[in-house]
Image 1 (cartoon, one colour):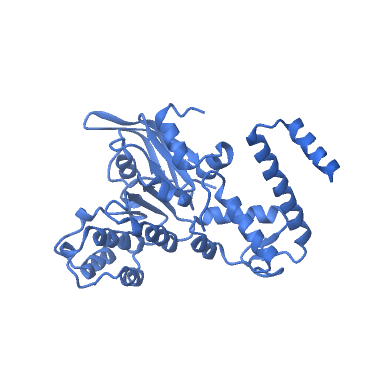
Image 2: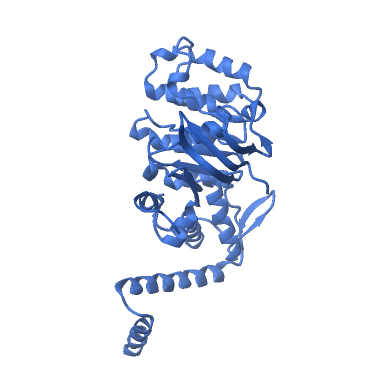
Length: 235
Length: 117
């Protein structure tokens, strides 16, 4: 089976500071992946590199064996941050905009999800609460039918009672065999969802299978993460 | 379902499905829900469900047929009971080791208890 995402010898500096150093990593299809790490460690940078919103200084990134480019960007759905939505649009305009921009966009799915979220299609985006803006972002990202979804902190402004709904939302709306990479701080809330973890620390990324952590170490992902963060996390 | 997060989720799901078969909630020969349906029911990834299915298949409890789905094996009762006994024993051993007993001590305790009966 060929990998969905493969990174070879990738390095990236942001504003003169090394964020990722000589990273080699492969990510298969059909996985839900938790991207974990302290604030400012480079989770967003990693997602932006995979999404081709940033170029690596060195190394190569491929998606389904195609080097990242405007072509792979079309087959990757990157979750917008609420502040990236055009404020002056209403929800229906945003749906039309996505439909015109992405041939894989499923307008019916977008309408169904908006209905389920209870979001008024005529409502101006600027009048929505932060939580509802995030829901619009999720709706747009998952109404695209692609193989890779990149979600940077999808639940920043969503209240605790909604977290479970977001988990369900992801499970209900991912196409078969698609991979989701999701950065989060809510490890305890989300860990049951993750197949694989990417833990960022000291310019490198530790990749582990969530079930293997539980089987071999008899510990939760949450505890394992704390352990990795407090010591070297060497095997 | 609330899972323990210090042991593999797929095994907890496999055990839960076994319990449903033993209780009769899932009759012998019955077709199991799809991976997607189970994924939503247990709120875990499709891969985790796939792993649970592979486990049940390898234990001779279900049979997965490509493109058709998975079925509870009509004659899996013996396998199920044997597995349940194995699991009880494994749990027991783990608990005794946790208390600090050596394997010899566990064996002697069990022997003693059996002789007392």
